Image 1 (cartoon, rainbow, N blue to C red):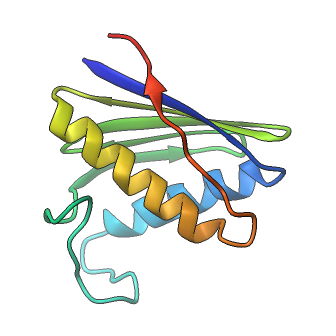
Image 2 (cartoon, rainbow, N blue to C red; image 1 turned 30 degrees about the vertical axis):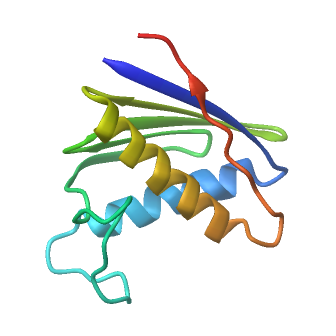
Length: 119
């Protein structure tokens, strides 16, 4: 399993964790639309299949057909760990998360700098 990690500095970590979980949960709900037209995700592919979403106020897990990501919110920090079986799937998860966080946190100018998580 390949992994990548990112620590996103923000005073609103729990809010972004909740938004990412909510967004993924809506993607995984059969028949429910997100309010936008279908589009390519993560460098031109089809949207991922969301298989599982669990979220509390300070932790979250999302499993996709590409792999999974886990999040932990603490004061001033959203810690993210992405996992996938191959490099392409890991990159797709990283791209998806970075794009969502940059959009959700555009007022804060959030940046997601990935590093190798080992594995």
